[in-house]
Amino acid sequence: MVVAPLGKILLAVDATETALDAAKYGIAIARTYGADLHAVYVVNESLLEELLRAKVFVEGEEVDLEVDLEEDGKRYLSYVEKLARDKHVTVTTELLKGIVHREIVDKATQIGATLIIIGEIDEPLSRKDAFHDEGEMILRRAGCPVLIVKGETLVDDIYDSL
Amino acid sequence: MVLANVITEATVRIDVSDVDKWALIEDLVDLIVKSGKATDREALLTAVVEREQQGSTGLGQGIAIPHARAEGIDGVVGALAISAGGIDFDSADGEPVHFVFLIVAPPNESTRYLKTLSAITFIGKSESKTSRLLSASTPGEVVSILEENGETSL
Image 1 (spheres, each protein chain N blue to C red):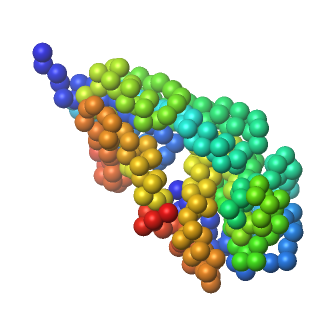
Image 2: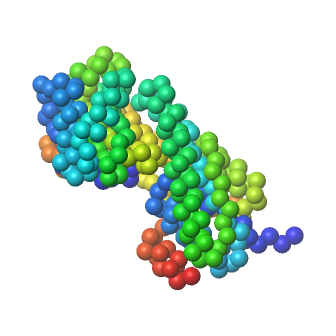
Image 3: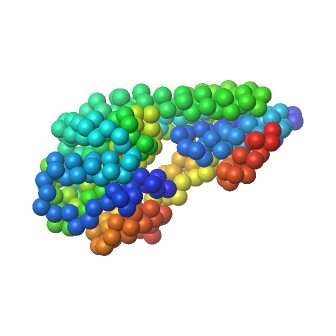
């Protein structure tokens, strides 16, 4: 069976500018190579739980935040849809909740992704943090190639030239 | 870097002493307003005070993170007060706090807001970082320490 190396792309979106750069690059690849593009935003429940455990929040405070995190996700996915539409590319978007790297890796497996695209990974706050960074975890646990998009100006040039 | 541009030299106070918790919160709100990142001082102060009244944000280990979301704030913004002698903040461990991080954000920046709060809890766990912050002699030095990446040890 022939499997196209860029047949199905999973774009991992989060609430960062670098994720939007990754979206632009993913759209460029999809447009150029005819790939199916699937964008996912994972509401980071482990972040909320971590802050609850650290007693940063009082009881009930996290409920409003969870709703707002979902709204953040919908906003970013909506913007990715617009970026894709502007370049005549179709993207399927999905909002998920859970542990970010697990949801991304599982979704990639579920849809048969041949490439995962993520934005630039943050510098770790510490060595321990490096092991918990979601981007790093996706790199380690993905069952397919992972592309990290860097270089905002270059990405903008590529996207604008489509 | 999560804390880059959240806390700036203009919103750092070092050598803080002889101040009560509520007056300090008000001072930190004023720093943020003066920095131009928040337009409605009263709404911001009310939001922060109301949250603090629900339960102290003194987490223990010398750190307090008063926080709130309100309209009229330009992104996730913070202010930091450092007190070598410590401030009574009704902390979970009953000890005075040496670092009071005020973090505020508009309602539509929830993810960055949470990541910033999380980043600060990491700072609180780092003895080397907190030790260096206590020894910092200028707000500029404090900001540089906060924006450093990847410590050699925790």
